[in-house]
Image (cartoon, rainbow, N blue to C red):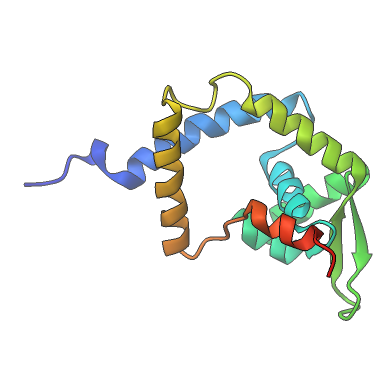
Length: 158
């Protein structure tokens, strides 16, 4: 018997992603950001105080290098990110989040945590279960998975 198309995981994930993405776009308009820019700020915040290349940001965000280059340019113009030469690879420019970038990121995060626009009607236990399953899928698919520990580890003096 054929599987019901409407119950296939890729289809369900795509539909949920599209709905949540649309909501996020609406919320980001108030901050003048795109999702690629938000992703870059969030990844750079985790990497702080270190910097990352545009290529690394592109790979970790799951967007094309061209899209990330455009996103970074907009962030640099607004003073949210700065580019500096890589210490050992002169041709590579590292992106670093600025204090203004960190402040804007935290404001966006506060806004997107408020209310129930992103929980799909799930309770906290269901959200925890879903989060664990999605993290497991990301690991199994070898996708970049930022963690709070990575930022904490970097902030501890060596």
